[in-house]
Image 1: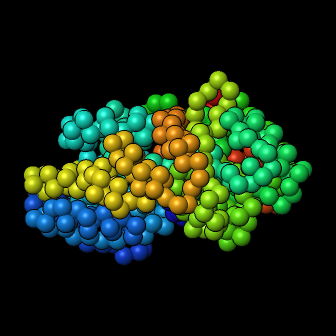
Image 2 (image 1 turned 135 degrees about the vertical axis):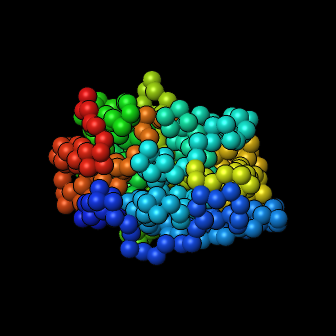
Image 3 (image 1 turned 120 degrees about the vertical axis):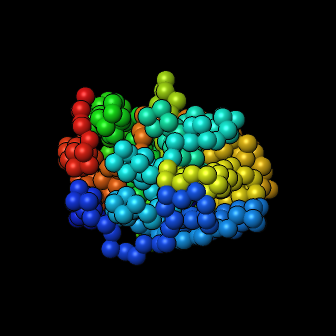
Length: 439
């Protein structure tokens, strides 16, 4: 769902400096247990996950829970700074956590921090097998299971079925078809849009689904960064004409500017949560107009991108009954239908919860049209997310926000700003201690 991402290049630089210096964050630190085998279960969650914690307390009334709410806007590095201090003091870690950003799992599972427990032999294999491989891959790090996935945010093609019917359009299936229809809409219906190219998830939306190697792990702490790969430049060449035709908005997705034009979005690739959180809540498109079809793909390939989701981690510093309680907690909040179906507003990553969630939130909904097609799109997308784009400590999407998005707003093309993007990715990867290859 909607969450803020890294905001400014200056902020990124300052945060990197803090990490390298081993400094902690200046914000207050919630209370936490550390290195214990008994006592209350300390969990850190963002505000949207409070209901999940309360559901767990109802299901397990004998387990005492101490819940602290952390901001979903907290930076990757600010949170890491807290955990560095916990490691130095030998206490303070939460027993379980919902990470504010998915890239947190990269440092939380690193040898330097080593916060997240290896869950490989701690959770049932049948539970892990309930996830589609593409959904759980973010948690499989170095051959170990280091987290559980909360919800799935795979990209599908959202579109306004009312406008498509009125104008006689057929939903595109491939990226080249998407470009062709976008240019047609620009000519025939100026003032309407086929997506957003501004900040927040733009890289994930367009380039992740194109299998663009902006942060592909190719060895221990080694990444391949090559946005000059044909898998990347084909998307650059596809998007530049749409930007020039003014049919791609330069607004960031989570802005008042985007909300103001949302009713004129004819189609857009977007995560499974766009239906409720964007078209209904933010754009205020009336019921009976919006649906989704299968993810856009390149001919001969079967990939899509992903915009969010969420990850649950368990502390490696606990044992005994406290560890057992923490495992019960993350299994419940990540997979139990009492949370994922009855309460969660986003499409669950855990396979057995998919159909009952879809029944409640799509098939029984009065908002969407062509519901069976939308259900099929969701189910196929979760299996298609390209696994060559892991979560690393440097975020290609956050760096897009500070490098590419401003240049586009100022009138540059993607082709013009692309060398600067490659350079920025390499610089940040190296600042975070990665070895970089560029081929």
